[in-house]
Length: 192
Image (tube, rainbow, N blue to C red; front, top):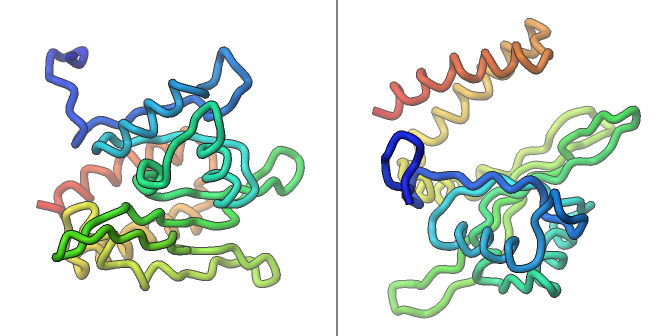
């Protein structure tokens, strides 16, 4: 298949947007279609999706059960899973971010299945995030084809850009989108 511009669709530069993993059909994705989307992620396609769940375990359990029946190797390619919690009045807060480590083989060909890594959790008592991503920085950098030091520098730049938005009270959706579009070319220049 081809994109609108005639270029071929490739796993390394294509992100599948899944409206939501849910059995509330027909608007959502479930059953065989959900499994196909998860399999696409397992062969290299990017995927952005939502699903209703309170914990990472709930996400994985829902996708393992029939009719989706994704297996652990397929689920290991989900990448980053972010858990949102309702704060009331329609507001939500990131409660936790997890990195799902892909199933891999070691230098002797043995299958390696490492458990998920917690990247960050929200501490409501202190109104701040507790960060744990430093423990998997080399893995995350490798996953996106960067050196660990370069990855850390880019994370810091992004943190500073987001802090600037907060300091300037940029919170309207369109203004945030414009700021992110303006930042993206800078990130691409830095990467080259």
